[in-house]
Picture 1 (cartoon, rainbow, N blue to C red):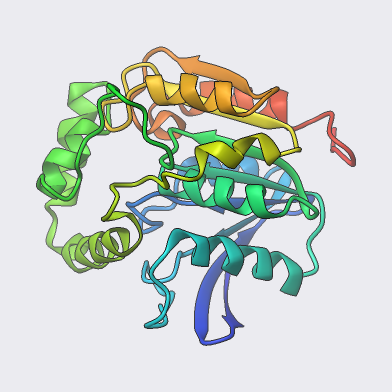
Picture 2 (picture 1 turned 60 degrees about the vertical axis):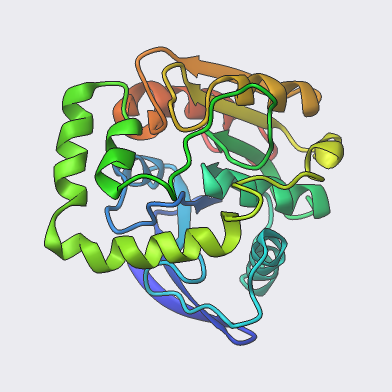
Length: 261
């Protein structure tokens, strides 16, 4: 893994890159990339994984004017252009999935596919949604897992002193983009039909952050989207059921133009 800082106007974007092959842009969720997810090492065996810290998260700076999810969408479209990347697989988790959708409804010229993992971005009437701004970070960590033991272990890590500063910064940045309305764009759903690249939705059956009803609604809004539900997973299927999630991704991503075998 190598880290570089890329300047996009007045935003300094910290970007980690690993592996070789077709480019895969990984867009993280509200927990940031303080703990590098193991799935990225596995994906880097077949792709060039490009994983930025969103502005305000990790080592990336955030300009004063940047306060809307559309700003992030345009920023990452500019990043792909600056890096001269084509046929990019975009994979986004939670907040990152929302950003990926906002990118794709605007422009898909540089995209090969879009994968959403337990994605934010839309409101579904009657669907349960956790308000992460109203609960403690340790409780949020517990909610993210289907397995109570893993949830407790995650809560202990969230309470560790070395993560406090990072957790506060991530929460502030998350609030900047997802406070009002809570983690959705009321206008996004009406434009999801414009996403004209292959689409995959991965959801944990026991997701207590965004209930699986969100996955069903996204599939209806995006013609041709595939939906895979992972039975023993919560909001972090790529962590809790790594091998299963990786198998699903590997079955989806090959077979596209320029795919590697």
